[in-house]
Image (cartoon, rainbow, N blue to C red; front, side, top):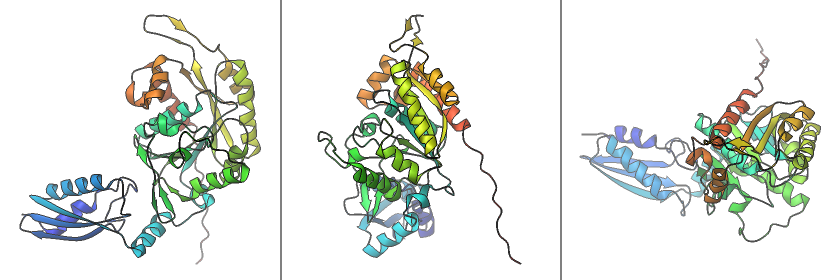
Amino acid sequence: MTTPDAVRAAVGAVRDPELRRPIDELGMLGDVTVDGTVARIEVFLTIEACPRRGDIEGAVTAAALSAGATEAEVTLSVMSEEQRNALTEKIHGGRSPEDRFGVDSLTRVIAVTSGKGGVGKSTVSANLAIALSQRGLRVGLLDADVFGFSIPGLMGIPDAKPTKVGDMILAPVAHDVSVISIGMFVDPHTPVSWRGPMLHRTVKQFLADVHFGDIDVLVCDLPPGTGDVAISLGQMVPHADVLVVTTPQSAASDVAERSGLVARQLGQRVIGVVENMSDWTDSDGAFHTAFGSGGGADVAARLDVPLLGTIPFTATTVAAGDAGVPVLVGDLGGPAAIALSALADAVIATAAPRGSRSLPLTF
């Protein structure tokens, strides 16, 4: 035999797959009754077209059965406007980027930048986010490369669409990372041709309106160069840490230094350099190099920061990007995955210590 209280406790602990909090805490759990061993449960979805309704219904059913019910009848209703407003205010009350990711925020922001395109910055961003998540951190991934967005494809969710609840946008989740990209809102085959004000507004909306969950780290994949998006992010999140990506060749490394220098001008902290597409030796002892050597160390020396990682240019990495299965998911034992895992550890080690702050007291 079971009781309504036992079923409510079990079902209430089910986490919404998009909001990533218990449904009871979110006000999504309605009436719970038990007739013998049959549990009847009402759940309020955030919107009628909730894309995860099947997952929620399945998880609620499993939770009820685990509490002793032999059968669960789950009724899926939809939140009223008043319930939705209360939900968004509860979990997303502070709406400005400064409120959510300012100096007092507990979320560390890591901007991944490069001087030029084609150096694998997005591949580094996607795999870094996954590696940090694999270490137990709660991670968000923001694709700020509006013109050349590729994060949805790299993360294996090219057709993902965010759920909109009021003014709040729920970021889709892939590999336990909350992901947002302009590619989720536009036709992937239509070019985005926006000028500065529109780019600034997009970055601000992503930082203010997208709900990533209670994340520890937000990885931002910036477009190449030192243009509008990099400047906008620097203005909104001036305390962000910056990771500079380059390839070994001097044509890339000479330009990569500039992105680090601009970040410093904006008040951001450059934590290190990553050399992508580096040389490597395979299991047969054969040495492979495609883009020369030494560029990453050169940029790190000029910026006076550590070279945090060298990522080998392997066929597996290229195939992973095309297939939408990151190497840290599909090729954990490969040289690129090992190097990316080491990069995540190095990035974690660069976290600035949190200082203590005196609190005003009155007696």
